Image (cartoon, rainbow over all chains, first blue to last red; front, side, top):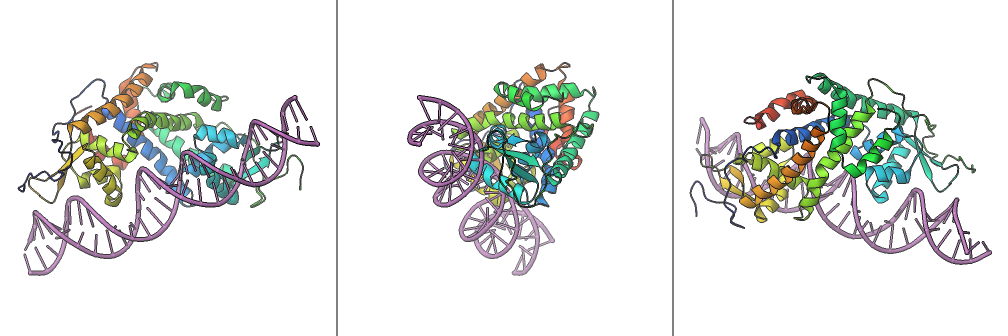
Length: 175
Length: 175
DNA sequence: TGTGTTATGTCAACCGTCCTGACCTAAATG
DNA sequence: CATTTAGGTCAGGACGGTTGACATAACACA
């Protein structure tokens, strides 16, 4: 069992499939891969800036949505991010300690913690969104029909149907 | 320091910013958020299926690219994924042990480990890509100009310019 | 009043996926 | 031969997520 083409992985003994997958109308490899790479680079810009603050992507998401909807309560944030309060906890604490967010007791229901950005948090969030918007703008300028609406509708169509109401709610004022 | 609107987060003493960010041509909140949600759901389908095998997203990415380019060597995979061999190690081992991939010594350079899918690995990869392609197809059908080329060019335009050659290389045969 | 529920926070233990640094073998290369 | 290269492995750590259990304060209601 030696020689140039000896099978190195002995376990499970499957034979190698040497041919690449055949072209198939229902297997859109280019778009699947482009979507993967596009998202990777879409967040890479922000990653770099966040690193200077010792923040990660979790901080970015929290900062973004609190800025977008000042006065959001913790439960709403958990629903949007689809994470548990245990995993939100440390992230929220760090953002408050660093002075990017503040928590204020709900005026009617004092159990609630209304989340607001500080000016510092607003500034950082705007900076991050600006970088991402610039990339998107550039990508739209590079297409034939410079049709922002089609891109918006395409992205919306990628979202799970049951989630679309929630996302629409988040975008109430802007189109 | 009590009362309905008492400031709960005392540290860093920033004042809350209550207004949502003003509309701004250079801050495309809808597209930024749609891209986030779209990617989340783009991945979610696959996550569910992978869970049945005890696999995560790292396994998915390895499985995908090895299937796409059978005979890929480890170094190429590391370059595409932009991770270290230490973090690839366990993932690759599990995929080999579960019989989804095999490693074969390079016919010319026997230090190399050529990576191939087994039929089992090919089947799983195709299944995963099929789910993702179906979502993409549906999203394209929902837009005005059902223009796949524009979506492809948009996604390509989102990719960091220095990375585009690498991505193009991966897509040689298909358009 | 008291009892139960809700909003939030916290402790502990765990997992997956990445990292750096150090070291090893086998094979190619000069 | 010595060196470099391809790949693998061990150790330790970080981050971001999970589940489960429990605590506190405030609301809601009989």
